[in-house]
Length: 162
Image: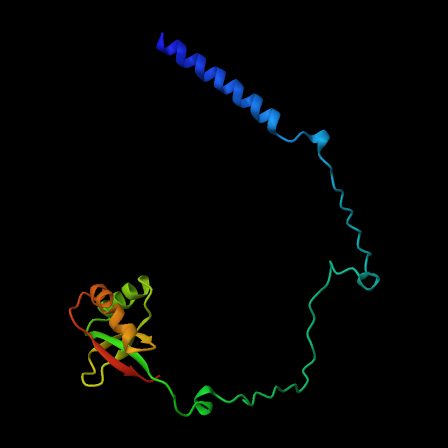
């Protein structure tokens, strides 16, 4: 008996929904149609040649030279001295290139720019730096997150000069 009630309620509600959808949907005969007429473009008279069977041809050798003199000043010559400080967070120095790549990738995945630099004191190691940051406070604010990503307890804040 429960099945019969359920089937009856289901069929009745389905019919009611269809009637409401039909009654509430906009009818085409009551809708206004806006017809947009797109004007046709005239055929260009200068393209009257048949380009379907064009063959490539060689151009005669003319002493054509290109002046490649660089007249654009490089950024280093314009900016002689940086008048503001940028800071980076030194995560550590690693000997394995795979480890360096993995650490840089993990910082990139978490939204922090990171890069590698050869270690100045030990040429076999590569230093991983995160940043640059505008202030030391930015690094201190994110220091716990940076340490967690790198799996370290402490790092070093360094003034960075590109």
